[in-house]
Length: 106
Image 1: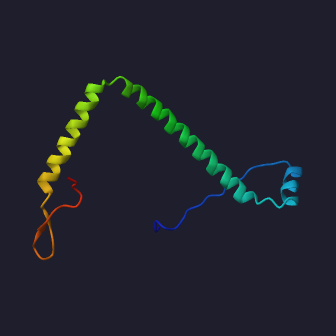
Image 2 (image 1 turned 60 degrees about the vertical axis):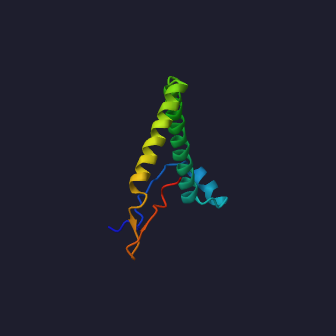
């Protein structure tokens, strides 16, 4: 099945008859209301998960000293610069001329 074709399933809910009549009387589009409500709830729970993950990461990061952070940043900068130096003139133009790699910022 091609990826760009959406796949759907039917989700149903039982509601009291008088409630269904009220939905119809007020012309409330049940299908879009249910879909939007479910999307909002899923999004809310995803954000809760992210918040919990961030709290756990924050607790772990608090245990790392400022000196260790500085060392990690310096090391990452050094490795990034070394990688850029290694490939800075490796991109070839169709003309055969070597040009500076635009992904490396100096």
